[in-house]
Length: 414
Image (tube, rainbow, N blue to C red; front, side):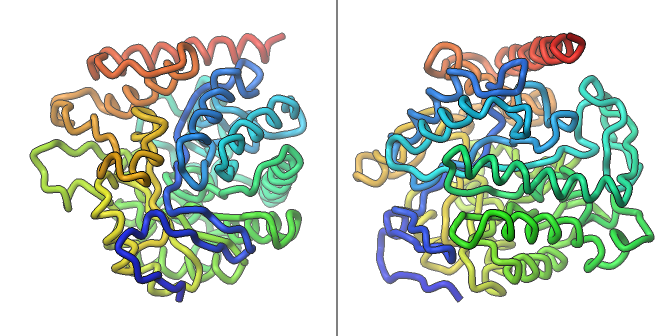
């Protein structure tokens, strides 16, 4: 088991990863959908500047937003892509900015699978032909054996490009319903060949990707994985399955495991809790699940989702539920909050979402879209606009993605 230091202020303690890299503290900027890629899916100046600001903010590690390994399988327009068509000079600038203030930086590598918007790819590859329940997503094509080998190769290629560009490592995204995540789910993975059925078979694609990436990048480059604690869907990837897959991933030599949960159909990771809920309920959504997973592992665990108060962060580490504290939204509100917390200026990360109306009074995904719009504002005007009403921010972000999709499609046609 990973050793838990005996200190009242755990968030400021360093942590050595299995690869030998030392994180200066326990605060991690988890991946967010910055949507600040240009029409060629390269980093914009806005994205580069934002990561430079985050790097100076005091976090130990910054993880980029969802970075597809295949430009035909984006989460949405505005993703940056890391492949042979990428402008590596721009990617190097992003890596340099992300590390300029003393933070380490990982690229989160992903393949959207069936969660690719229909406008970008009307028939995306997926582990099966099970379609997403929402409009705007096409019926997927079950991935073939040869296409599986191609996808594994894409992850390897992207990881090597990340290393060449100067990043400290990669995180393999196997949560939230994307290709590697849906492959784990018996509800979505209906295959009857070697890639479906038993948990061993359903985990084969993820493990093959992780194994190939680790072999390619070597033992001293950080390789992490993001995994659902559960899909929270009947017949989906269960918590018991998650524990078993976590143990399999440890055997493949990953450096830490990030725990999250849900997918587009059950968006637990994007949960919006009101100020009326108790602090314990609204913070650290996945702690109970992570505690079970961490107990089965000897590698560090990172929990992302809901943390805000310093006391609960420290307790989560001291109590053995997690080693690393992952957060996203507070970095949008105040990019410098980690340094303030570590210096004792504040005892709580920004929690502006607690002032919002209850989720049932808002359009689906409105709070997530509001935060994504604030990220866009960071990229275009250098800061957020926190007074913007939630619904207005939601609508503006949807329009931003619509316009970005048009630019992307125009570029493809030319």
